[in-house]
Amino acid sequence: MKKKILIATALTTVIAASTALGAYAATKFTIKVNGAVANTDAKVINGVTYLPLKDIGTLLGASVQYDASSKTVNVTSKASSGTSTGSNKTPTQPTSTIGLSRSKPAPLGSEVNYKVDKYSGKYTIALTLEEVIRGDEAWRLILQENQFNDPAPEGYEYMLAKIGAKVVSNQDTDTSVRISYFDFTLVSSQGKDYDRHSVVTPDELNSNLYVGASDSGYVAFIVKKDDQNPLITFDREYDGSGGVWMKP
Picture 1 (cartoon, rainbow, N blue to C red):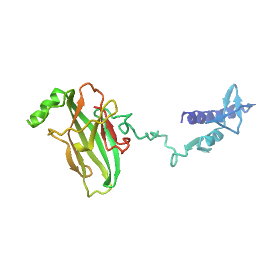
Picture 2 (picture 1 turned 180 degrees about the vertical axis):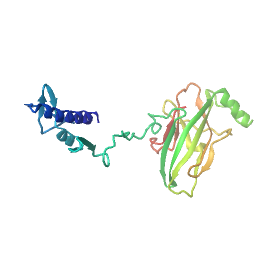
Picture 3 (picture 1 turned 45 degrees about the horizontal axis):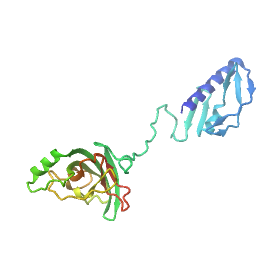
Picture 4 (picture 1 turned 180 degrees about the horizontal axis):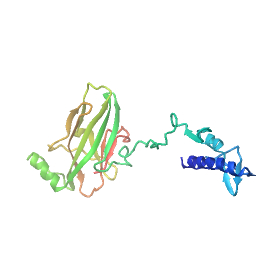
């Protein structure tokens, strides 16, 4: 866009300059626009080089119109509709891939929008890892929830991950989406799935949600005490790819 503005300014200058001076020197240049050679000549007037705006605009995919009555030059890109108003348009940002692969897990507090396409339904869900508690505090909360809960095995500790879920859209708006602790798996930093551990969890994530509804709750995992970088996954493919990935 800056190139177009500079060229437009140059044309306005050359109109004024040619009226005042009426003479110029033609100099042979090789002019390239986005790698394409322009079939046009540059003009040097009093040591200043000018380029024909219309030819350059064509190579840039823009239309150039000159209104002699108002002495106005209008440059409009093909991406714009109607006459340019001078307002800046923000380019469309690419969709974020954060949280959609093992190599790019979503950090704590980051929302991930994910499209589910299965025989059971097609819907979009937004997941957020809201809080992570592990070690002694996690065990205290689990034991407080049910005195018959077993402690974590030797060398392991409990992790409580609070996950928020919202159904953004659903192909069948009359059906609900079930979201529960069973949908999530913990993967070690070495890349191995941790076994599921049955435990009565405080404020457990377990809901049926229609479009627009949301809920949050805890999912309990066991994790090796020295594993500081496990990942939480949701809805992976059979080969382990895809799905949602979150970093506690």
